[in-house]
Length: 332
Picture 1 (tube, rainbow, N blue to C red):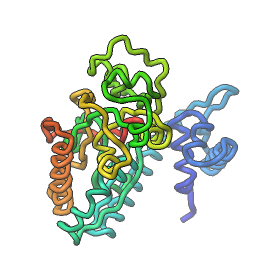
Picture 2 (tube, rainbow, N blue to C red):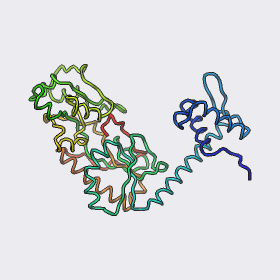
Picture 3 (cartoon, rainbow, N blue to C red):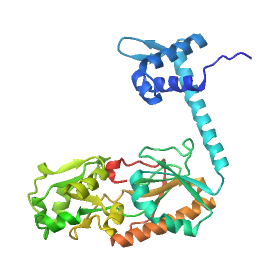
């Protein structure tokens, strides 16, 4: 039987072009040049004997035939990716979990605690998908995720983990040799940095918010340095002599090993509805490996809250659609 339809790569290129209605954005997604995308689309049209797009100097639009093929291509590619994900899970076996999380969570919260998990469950293996991007459990070959958000995700189970508490820290060198840091107002003599990030009306705690909580009036934040990545704040504090506002759970190891020093007792929490959550498909909750990891990570979250000296809010956040990825600005 002769081949009458394009290959998978051509379909993926076409699906991206149909979704974006822009060859340049489609090219960025699939890793080609716009000219290569245009060539592949023209090759598909010649192969199928159909015109898929109408083209003008300023835009492209799907033809009726293109719209039909676009819907079918998206469904076929999604089904194929889901089948590949299921096949990979079968090959990995029931004792192997794949966790999607950010680099900050993996390196600063999970890995320091990892020996306790291996001691409890030496038979279980865990691999990581390190990303800040949203992942789909059905198609992206992951079993669980840790993400920052509200925990309300359709079809998924979400468990609230440790509380997110933001407070000022500095390096031991700055504390010993810089301008005095005996009261919150003394911070006005220092370089101050924080994360600048907001989502859906939630603003990540910043210096104006902390100064208000500390009772420092008429604070001028025009000299503050704002970063979009919490790792840059930590680096500026350790290496650059600044004082930074950071998520305390993410720098517990830095504090315990003496690289950072917490200043004062004043801290600011994120909006009540937001936290880090363990997220997984509802139907996967009874898998022994998922149950074991869930029990362990919730116990570690309780330890983390105890270390921070905070009372955790309710752990079980209910059902939801998919894990909401906090950008690295959120300290994840």
